[in-house]
Length: 153
Image 1: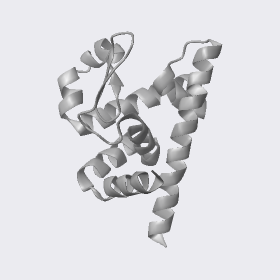
Image 2 (image 1 turned 135 degrees about the vertical axis):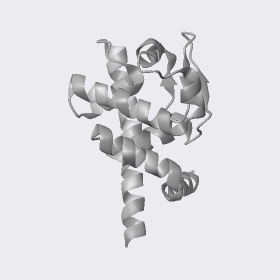
Image 3 (image 1 turned 180 degrees about the vertical axis):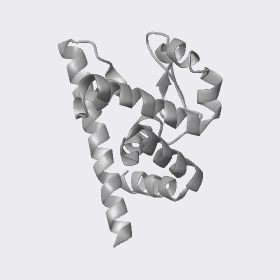
Image 4 (image 1 turned 30 degrees about the vertical axis):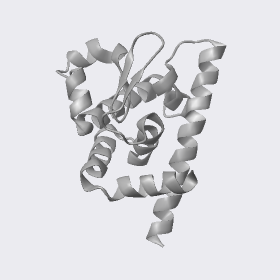
């Protein structure tokens, strides 16, 4: 399992187009691109055409699994579900925007990272979901950082 994750992460880091998108979105939103990569790995395993069906009827689309609950807001920026499913870079930028919104609301914190997936609703269940999600992202983030460190040596 770790070997597969490690090789997949290494593959993405060496794939210039998507790597550039993570780097550019990170730069533009002042978010560590490796944090965006960690989210994409956990959300879609870097699958740009991934679609997730949720129990509430909403969909999660693309690399960053952008939930259709954001459709109205994104439409005001000219971003459609088709854009999110067909343009991996747009999907990454949209995920960065959503994470930046979380950081603006709760500060740069793992709780805000957890809100990327579990939202802001104040309840014990949602707090547990945010914690569980953020823990997964943090673990992946550390693996990415360590793999980059190992490659640099």
